[in-house]
Length: 456
Image (cartoon, rainbow, N blue to C red; front, side):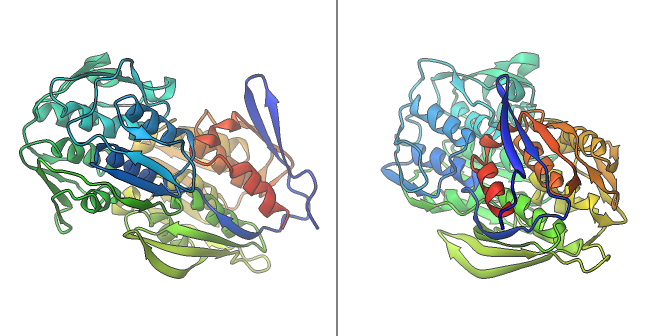
């Protein structure tokens, strides 16, 4: 029978509060889920389609706010992009080096991917002037990690705190190739430099301390860029100048969105969920490795390749029996972190239900996301009864303490909001998540999906 009044969404002032009140005898989570298209791939498909010669078609595009920001920016620079939808988006590219100088400020909204990757493109368009900004959250996030290597290439970029933060102004230049040894494993840094290298004469190389997600490399090759990868040294080289040609892109489901359901299935007794058509690119599957280390019952079904990206259906079942907890603690750090950085908030939820103390380390990057995710997740879960101690680069989470419902806050961070919603499924009483409208950034259908699977 459907569970009545488990989930409600109420409007408070200009914000939404998501209330979750599981029944005392527990929920039964079951069903098939289709998650939104991969956000990283959606951004890149729109950008490369805009820079290519000819038409690019995109199926499965994420309809969150962030891809809309990318589309709006490139429309302002001359690319023709149809209305965004999940079935068929058409992008008529303008060609490399042909972006128009926009009439107004380019606004990346809340999207760090849009802003950081776009800077590499703008910096290499000689003779044109661009001004870029974002919302309040994005304007507080560091941009020096991409501005500094771009300046080494000869880019002319200035802005707040010597271009450490948006708004930023860019005067396009003919750049010079560099070999950049990145101090962090970051797909955004790597992609920004590679995109700058598209129009740069010679070979531009990025070497990382560990392997970050490789969607840019895969898609650049598919669009015709001359690119080589050295996996042993974590290096990628692009040979410019290049020409890109329009392609047909099929976007798989986003494993970062699937992660919320994977954790829900791992912590809610009796759960059995099938998450369909999920991208399982090895540079993104750290969340699967982490949950399996913790003892979760997750299997990949029907593995296949879709437009060059590995895809599978993911089945998660609750693994606990009787009084035996389903999960056990582990340590997450090192080279695993770049492969699950966006999933750490919801993995912290899983750790609160694991036997023992879980340590998350080497994740200082979380402090400069849409929020300080280390501080916010620690504080909000502790308000629900968890025992979490902040570290400078992560968290120590003592599992096994029952959670209780209370009022918590997303801090307008989409991943925080959804992670707290998953935690609320196992909390006694009602949990109210303030500013829950943040989920629309990456997963507009999160609340309807949650309601549906809670009905069993």
